[in-house]
Image 1 (cartoon, helix red, strand yellow):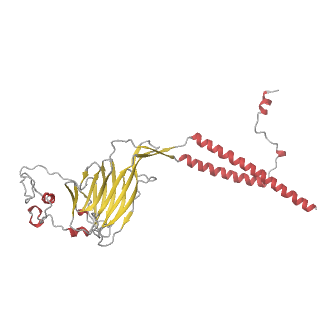
Image 2 (cartoon, rainbow, N blue to C red; image 1 turned 90 degrees about the vertical axis):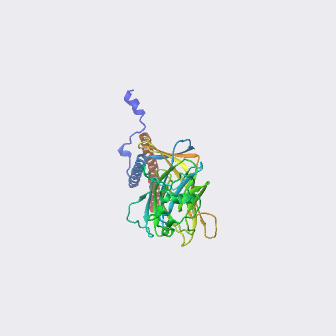
Image 3 (spheres, helix red, strand yellow; image 1 turned 30 degrees about the vertical axis):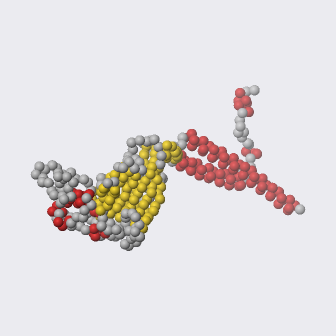
Length: 372
């Protein structure tokens, strides 16, 4: 026996002679449909191969040394920028009053349109030393003999610390500089944009009217009106970089309207989940945070205790969510394509046989009926 004859016996795909093969219209229809299905499935598999898959993993957060970055963009529709204070504090007792670093305030009219001026970036200015500076009077509010009040703000701060009422028109440092009254607070709106970095622990931050200060661990805002309308819109709030598919910014675009002459206290309780995002393109880790929110508003018009303002309290979860992008291998893509081709052709062959047998049986019955 020749070697070629031995190999022919191993042929698993014997060829049928053309004289014994019958081509039918039903078989052609099944072939066209199955080929179209195979092309469509391979195209979808190719799209899936080109797109990275997202793997999720949950583990205990062991990261250290990361600051918590708060990105905010909030619009207060009925309170002027000069009368809004942004304060932040955390559970360690670290307090940041009148936060102004990297915070911009845009003045708006009552319709929400920006006023034509450069955005206010409040920074703490340090005056250069001057040997000829005299010691200004604090008008009895100085805390020691060397305490000087050379500016209007220093005099007002000294009076606030002693909880005294002040007559601005009788203070020399305030003449021509401090003419505004609290009624001016309700003639404009304010849009506050920027970011701040705080300790990575539970804490809070808030927007409230008036200048803020602390006396004996008490947080106080100096404002003369109790009825403050705080209609606001949270344009953006996130704790880190924004990821579109994750819940890093669930409060974006939320608008809260307050009735006229009604003072309310708004509380937002946030549960922050640290998140790590690993992109397949560059492999660079992105540390950000997702959060869920619970809202509560309190009416202060019925002598309820509280202060009008917008308060955000947040807690950090001890667990971290990791999102990792991963591309499928070409071998996996090729295996799926072979499975599609083999599976569809096998099913199509079975359907073609059933269709031909059914047509032949029907045709035989018709012929028998005609003969009888």
